[in-house]
Amino acid sequence: MATVGIIANPVSARDIRRVVSNAGNLSATDRANIVLRLLTGLMAAGVDDVLIMPEKGGIRAQLGRSIDRMKRSNQRVPTIMYLDMPITSTAYDSALAAKMMKAEGVLAIVVLGGDGTNRVVITHCGNIPIASLSTGTNNAFPEFREPTITGLAVGFAVTGVVPAEFALSFNKRFEVKIKDHREIAIVDVAVVAERFIGARAIWKVDNFRDLFVTFGEPTGVGMSSIVGLLEPVDRYEPIGRYVQLIPKDIASRFLTAPIVPGMIEPVGYREVKTIEPGVIYRPSISAGSIALDGEREMTFDEGEDVSIRLQLDAFRTVNVSDCMNYVAQHNLLSSTHKAQEAMKNKNLV
Image (cartoon, rainbow, N blue to C red; front, side):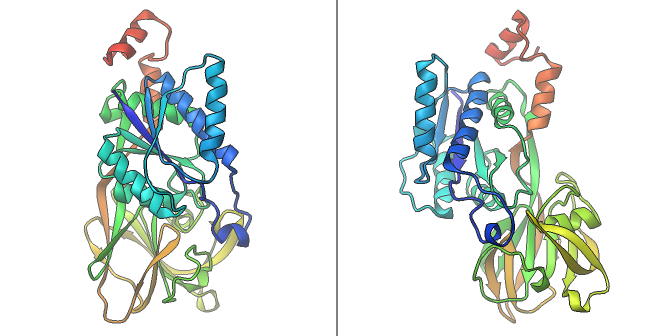
């Protein structure tokens, strides 16, 4: 029986970038509604059991009331189970939930959050495919999509109705090492000319010196938008991009980029290069801090060995578009007897 995990971060989109710009925020009711629509899609695709991370932000209470109303109306929803774990209301919760879901054998994890939450889950979920719903501040990695459709795609993927070669995609990421300390980044690595962490979220571009990006799209927001507007690279291309950044007062080349939702700033830069997989790259400065997917996580001093390496085929995601194209091409949601039998038996039509 297929079980899907859901990690809904109740505090995503509440960092300092929401204060300094016009970045949005979702209430517990909004987040519960997203989960409810996700559950509807999962149920329709044949998923009966869902394992959810507990939290203290109010999502569980709102979701419970909505599910009770649905049951009274004879609407079917998957069986909901919550992980038995301590709640700290920090990133530790998402990390622990990912580890526990891996141990429980879930076949996919749906993440409600931004780039940071997705990075935490991917760090700890092993080879379990993930699907992302955008609820964070910076949302370069999670695609904006209706949760009902994501639920359908994930359900068809984990039940085997859509074969893995169509349902799943491999993704690239960066491995960042300072001596023996290792972290990953799924979108971007920014080297900052400050050695203190302070407010972890970054937005003051004049302090940035290096930017390493797995992908950058012209329609993106955040640091990766710099690459998206200079020399775009697709999330599935087997390369990355590097941009050397310099302060505006000494720069001769500028780019105006949406580095935070609601904040568009001029950025000084010197050059753009292609990053090859497996090659070790190093910061252009001898000391500073490193931000991973928009949040400062690591510091380094002079003489410390810092390496940044692009890894291909590093983790898997549910490819919602390809999944639903397969469903349409094979009439898997058709009311014909042939299509219904195909879904029931998990065979191709």
